[in-house]
Length: 402
Image (cartoon, rainbow, N blue to C red):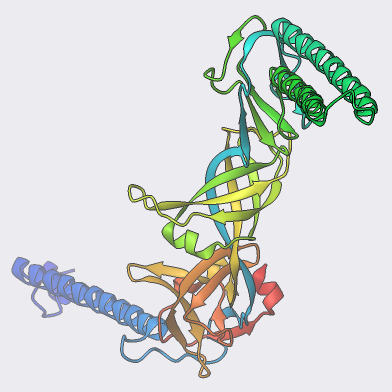
């Protein structure tokens, strides 16, 4: 075979590519790939933007989805009901009527003290016995004086009787009769004086003993046997009349205005798990200018767990009001205050400002902003925006309260 002919046959006439042409082709391919990638990214962003607009819509015109795509929210018309207002307060326990007992008589050395603090005493019961040995002798002397005066009176009467028998015979003059009559009357008067002096000494002797002026709980005992006491010794005993206690509950000006005499209250002493029922019997007519508080005095019956000077809390009924009640989950708040979402007749959501009141077992009272006929969103209000279209699911008032 001819070598040149063979080479000629293998060559098709196209010159082989140069090194520069190969570099240009690679750059073109790289550019096309970048264009494709950028286009794909732009397409994905466009799809995401469309989905976002579909879900949230614009600020001016909320997106309106189909009925199947609308979010379901639980709503309820709360209605209205009577709500008892509750006012919380704290204060100090004290005897409602505390009676200080001291020396009413002359005093003396204390012989015995038969009672102690914490005991129940009766009216007239002896609390402390005072030595009365000297007074007893004075009483005995006064009693003897009465006997002597009575003897003088009998003698004066006998003399008068004899004179009256002799006056008709002329042996006794009328003047003598008058003198004897005066003597008899003076003797009788001396008897009465002696009896009065005796009664005075007996009364003084009886006043030596310290007695309870009324029945009640003995709170304090400040005297011991052997002690010498007098009218200047101060308070020896302190008694809570009838055992009645009270709570001096401190309230702010606003709360004090809501409380009235006769309001029921539940008192819980510190350290005691028991609760005691009482009622407000006096509302302070003045306000302390330093702390802007006043006193509501709550009367309590006797109980051993009610100790004067102790601390206690009280829940006072502050009247009643008629208002809707909502669960806590329905109430939202921001820098402007509290609000709820209500569903309007076209199923769009609107923000409604409200004023909350007392918290009860049935929910939070709404004292302003609702009349009870609105459809209020009970839950998931934090995920809604004003103007959103929703699918309301109505619950009864009883289910809503739960």
